[in-house]
Image (cartoon, rainbow over all chains, first blue to last red; front, side, top):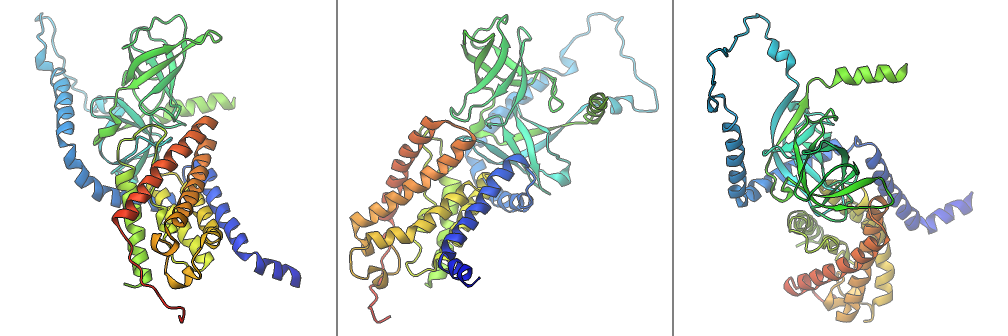
Length: 283
Length: 177
């Protein structure tokens, strides 16, 4: 017994070193599996409030670019107004729904929430974006995030009271179901965490006709995003002769470098198909 | 200024510079990500208890991890260099009792060659361990080796610049202390 105490006393520094290493390793491996580590909520609140202060300064340097993209988004919206279209035939009449119950309300599927980007990384192997909206404002994990020009940014992975952490498309574990806009062939968008600014679309069937510059959009199969949101543009095709599918190199439509505003997409009808699927699986 | 206050200010400055300057600049290349914050550990006083050194290093790494959302990676590499630091100092000290005459490692107290060997070795260990942990999750062997070498070179250049710009003047203390 005495020898054990002597041993511990002699090697106490080393044991302490191993202990701290153990704590670090525990954090590394537990954080990747469960995003809800105990400390992450508190840590998010603190780093979030500092990031926000920094962003108020940094934001000024990008006002011009932010303004440009807002004008572009506005232009797109103006072009969708009803007054832009003439009704050629007087037979067409707009019928007004006179039901007392607002049937539009229950049909709404996606709700968009504006959120300010307060911190952003692009050059790490796994990139995260922090938004100034959290649990108290109705954000929950697994919600989709797009930028103001309707291009896909990522998925919310963690929320604290006032901040949310988003796993950007430039993340190893990001997996998005995508579709070619022209042909409709579906595939999966992934990131290899080595080349910044390049995404890959895997499992595109070889029957697809692809030319570089083609648009890739979300497929609509995921319960996070509606279909048809921009993901990126085809750069070139990696033709692997041994496989029966194409892999496409993709240039993302979002400019991750100067992201200032984003929209969080809340799928209001998420539960119903989920429960149905669960029921089928348990049968 | 007392040692404690000086180190607290340094801690905040290094974290802020790392998070809001070095992590913000567009990457030189995908394999080059410079780090400077661990210079804080290199500058800790000679006399500091080894356990306290490791706790401080862990706190530093953990703080950066919170900002970078990479829980544990920086903390582990910081603890590793804090553990190895005293061995290296013992090996490299040339002047008799430099650790008693001066407060902390610097060009002045260790001499230029010794100080830079010290910085280079610890930078290399820190970067290789950091990128090794990253490579476990993401990349391959080539990625790990090249990224370690290039980033170590750029970080060392940054350390050299910091040492040249912010000269730390240290009082020579007599052995009677």
